[in-house]
Amino acid sequence: MTPTIRFATKEDSALILSFIKELADYEKMADRVTATVTDITKTFFCENPRVEALILEEGSQPVGFAVFFHNFSTFLCRYGIYIEDIYIKEAFRGKGYGKALFQRICEEALKRGCGRVEWWCLDWNKPSIDFYLNLGAEPMSDWTVFRLGQDQIKTISDPYS
Image 1 (tube, one colour):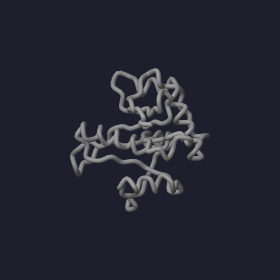
Image 2 (tube, one colour; image 1 turned 135 degrees about the vertical axis):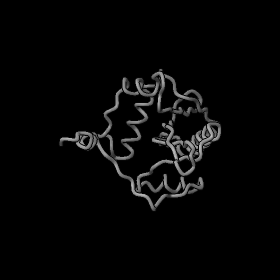
Image 3 (cartoon, helix red, strand yellow; image 1 turned 90 degrees about the vertical axis):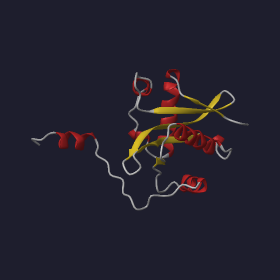
Image 4 (cartoon, one colour; image 1 turned 180 degrees about the vertical axis):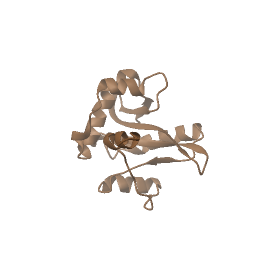
């Protein structure tokens, strides 16, 4: 069956959160999800959203999603698309739906004049890594990801700490 891929609407807020929770469970990080339906609605569907979501459906059943936003390359002097999440429900994997989501994101990247599409993958997630390599993606092994959490942000932003 050929899937349908559409941009998420405000009415999909609870669905997006359910996909986020399923993905977090798969990634063994369910305890880290603090997002709410209200958070999704306020960030994805505000006047000038900085994040977007695609919903993949088999028939009328939602079976996957992708969350993405723009980043920027100073070297290319072009925007890119960063995929924050991409997820297909386990029962629907192996049908080409993940590839269909990537194709749709790449179509959008070309339409928007983007210079690249990027994402992170957990290093233990061999099925996903193999899938990405089959797409022709290049692992960026010469880069290290750093992060500042809320506590570090507050500490650094306070000049008197």
